[in-house]
Structure formats: C-alpha cells, structure tokens
Amino acid sequence: MICFANVNRKRQATFFGHVMRREKLENLVTTGMLEGKRSRGKQREKLIEGLADWLKAGKSLEAIEATKDRKKWRSMIANAVKQGT
Image (tube, rainbow, N blue to C red; front, side, top):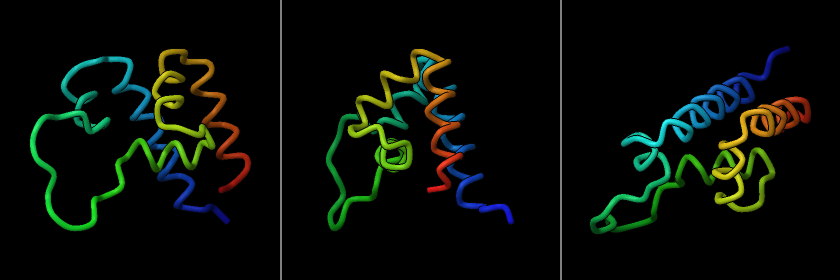
C-alpha cells in the first residue's frame, strides 16, 4: 500500500529543491528569512525544518546546501523514500 505522507513529503522535497536553486522570492519565503515581527503564540514549523527531519539532514542549513548539488539532493530524497519514514 502506498503511504500518502511519504508521497507528499517527496513532492515537497522536489519542489523545495527547485525553489532553492532558483534563488528568487520563493527562496526567501520557504526559508523563512523575511524581515518583520513574529506573531504571538506557538511558532509554526517551517517547511525546511520538517524536510530536514524527514531527510535526516541534521540541520536545515545542511539541507539547503544539499539542494545546490542536484545529484546529492536526489539521492537524499531517494534514501528517505526508501526508508519509509
């Protein structure tokens, strides 16, 4: 049976890699590096933090650096999908 959470994470990861290589406004939005005040209450989990946990990249910065090398990024995604986490 197909795990839809895994399929969704894979799609998020491929989209994230695409956006990070373009280095435009979407890059700033997905990494959460925009100026301004934070909202009150519990902060939402950023997309990159969730993907870094899923890919077992350790820190989000490692995942961002991995997107620059397309082969490395694809292998990280394939390993995460294979593990089924």
